[in-house]
Image (cartoon, rainbow, N blue to C red; front, top):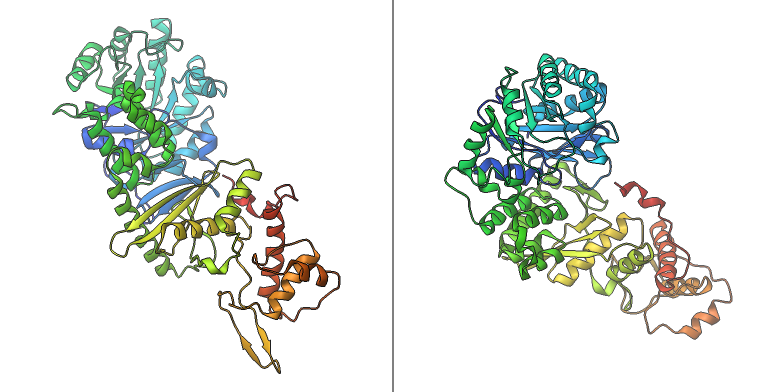
Length: 547
């Protein structure tokens, strides 16, 4: 991938186009790409607030071949785009400040085809910040924002408005907007107070088209005017607009952009899921979009099953796409490992790769006490932190019959790059990575213990394997744990011996710093694991993971 996707190969023309409207929670990358596949000429992203975007960094995602704008230490990007849409995607922002607007526009300028300012959203979260429809009553601010953007970026600038109660005020406003040098204006033909159930004012849009010379994009015809592809042209003629923008009609069935006719919802869902999988879309967002496509069928048995899903893989199961999901995950893991090798990354430190905290961890059951496992420790920790129960997504590699698991905890994902021969082992490894990343011990017994033999010249290293017979050093570690109330030995440890030896101080001859650190960490974490009412784990180490 190049260092920059570059600007559009040619300046975006807004005339004679059919467009996907900006819609919150709908206009993410998979939906935009699907709309383009079906025939949309231009697609808008969902409205993104300037304050949020200014906290983002531009990141080249080599794993997905995307450009991500992501907040520091966040799990998912605020805005994701790719080369396939770069000449036809318009970035819409919510803003009330010219300087902030320009900073955001400059941030994304090289990766999108146009910039749009939302001046019509009537929702309180937008208007109370002076954004959206609040700008309609502040024409001077509109002029400042648009003029600053037009003069400050090399790509086209537009805005999307609603109509005002008085026609003369609306016409005066669009003349002012045209004077700023914008490339087009999108008009939602309803007043700020009106909702989709109210009929669209096509006559007002037509009056606007007769007042300005720039392209007018008509919006608001879904439902009462536009139900199929042929209706798009009728709405265009009724409004006299140069172009038409679809919102609800598209979210109900993206194939409305197909000149050949609309597809059944199941076909649209499967096409959408492919893009959601390919571009690692957030499961909750994908679920919401599928619910919009299902519409009334949400109350059906399958609709209720969709409501219960928590992962993309579970959604895929409802439309017989698990094989595709698993194949993509296998290819992605191979690609991830290839990138790691090229970059010479350490496999023993957690690193964020495509939104997944990854380490190279192999789970070996005998390296853990009989009553302790990473999954149980993680579950206990999650409950104490009042978090939802960890959820696991596991895929199987067909050729070698090996498993790879990703655990989600507090909306963050963790995985081992090691493929295991059993599903339960892969899940334990994922839980181990999560605990290590959070700065918690995963319950593993101390390793690399140097055991002195006879004259102290002969040493045996366990190299991560628990000795079949308890060594003197391990016994001393257990005794020391007993002194402080810890219990880290296996079930068959002699408790009475622990109590007896715990009354006197025993010097350990464990010499390596790794063993000492592992021993102390193991004691602390096992105290918390054993006693749910005990002292709370220090979470300072994991504060950096908060998004």
